[in-house]
Length: 208
Image 1 (cartoon, rainbow, N blue to C red):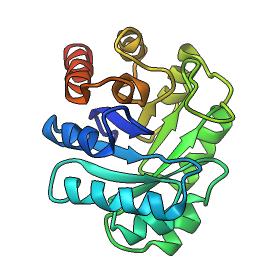
Image 2 (image 1 turned 30 degrees about the vertical axis):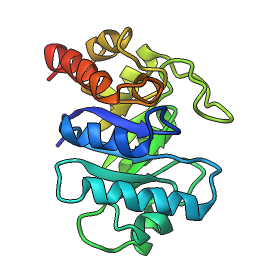
Image 3 (image 1 turned 180 degrees about the vertical axis):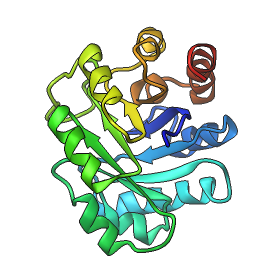
Image 4 (image 1 turned 90 degrees about the horizontal axis):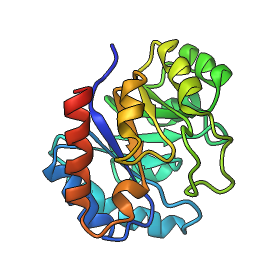
């Protein structure tokens, strides 16, 4: 069954701070918050992860750690999100056998999305839909029409990602996506709760 939840918040050096953004997400009932601190020392990632885990524990917001399975285990996160060049979903599940943990996977083309069907992650990210500076090096832009076609062909829960903001979100939802991830649309501003509320208002009006 495809999950419908709207906004999936990815936190990468947010202007308002990791804790304030996570508190805003919890207050707004956001389903997923992912910590993504690419290139940061492991101890810094773990310290931040533990603080965000404390904020999300016992709430409706699921806390996901990007890439680092050991950090996710150490802070008892709700799950881990993996890229195509990270630990495989199969290996991560073998290592992290605690019940109920969530395993997400990034996909960037039709073949990767088809391959995901065999290993059944809990959801797949599809993108980038639009150009975005948050990945180094950037993945090739998939484009909205092609990404939507990939999503329609998948039996998995899908999350659109890459350059999505309040101005292009209506196009993303009109293409058939029901879930979308953002980084800068929340993290680049001073008021994360307002940004989250505005995005979810668009989602509820057009897709929720």
